[in-house]
Length: 199
Image (cartoon, rainbow, N blue to C red; front, side, top):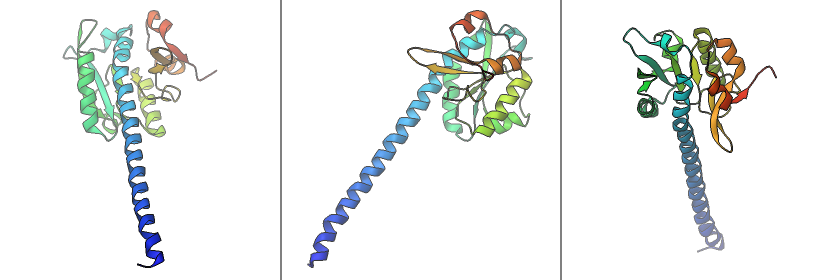
């Protein structure tokens, strides 16, 4: 075996080990992000339920079948969305004595007007900035709560979300709330963190 071959063999082995370690690190990082996002999605269910219960006009949002329609929205991950939809159903079977119907709906389906206007929208997957802007405008135009559990979305216009600080509490975009005309009871607004785009 030549001197170059003796050097190349351990070097090649080292490169394989480094490649494997790099792959494992990327996988762990990816799983960590996914599990973190899942925790935020599930954490927000209860806050969403409480926010809807604080809507002063909730009884006016009942559909012709006597149900309160809620949509769990997704962009392209329908499998995860179905799972999150089940979680939202468990958390929100009845609101203020009104039976709830949770449907899993794609963002495109909603924005083209293929579905009736719901009482509330819960985002089950992060959106691109343009998509979120379209969803926010839909919520404002139709007077619908748009709730996103994902970090940064309230600052981008979502009406409500999750503030994770020393304690978990609702996060409200005051500008979007005013524009949408939704009337939320004061007890909820007092405990929430607020963001005002005009400041």
